[in-house]
Image (cartoon, rainbow, N blue to C red; front, side):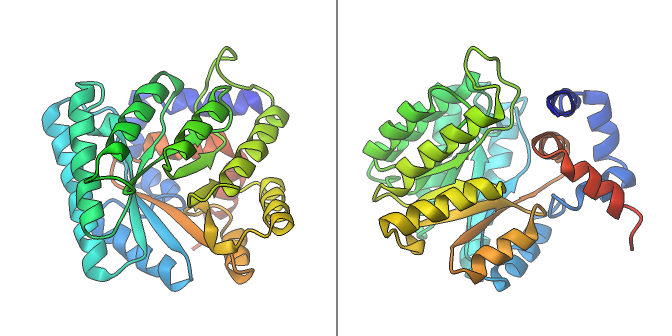
Length: 308
């Protein structure tokens, strides 16, 4: 399983295969299970459908590591448009943003300025921006930017961040973020990290995930628990029941196209669920990380590829 995960993560960085997949009908068909489409209209159509099923949405315009300031500003404009259309359509949706897509590798100041503009826009219409976490080399700078933006009156409460349970540092990060009253999405983590910074055994990651989820659930901050792992979900349910935590004090988050049965079951049980809906032409790295996270997705794709 670990070898398969490493293989998919390596493939996610293969530029030739990415070029082929993102420009072929075969690639588009393969990705359609996990990616809403390539246009804003595709994303909004899926968001409306998910809302009708009783679930909220976070929209991700796919793309990482832009090559210029112009590309960063162009990516930001897509998100500004999304925020306006979400408001116009009265959708239960927010946005998820990667700082490398906002120009972090060109200039941290540029990425912070763009994120600030998005958070200010979101706050003005009662919405919210989640800053996605990338690999561990970018963890500190991402957290620093989020904390500085949350400290500003114009963006306070309109920006949150992701914490990855497989990193050793994550408990200290969660404690600091909660002290700052910054909303956290907890996930296990999807990058290939060295043992110097991350747990390598699934059991250790799971134990840390449960420990961090309890810290988040026990806080007054509205946080998100992002997992498809039924054991982790059961642990959350047990904790909130034992401690009398209302189901509207937090939300589960799941990926578009993954465990739809579980998403619907949680809604029927009265839990809040938000679906992470990605879209855009630059879908290949995201798609490969989904296969790396859950190799069972490969079996699903093979079984369903030739179905109408």
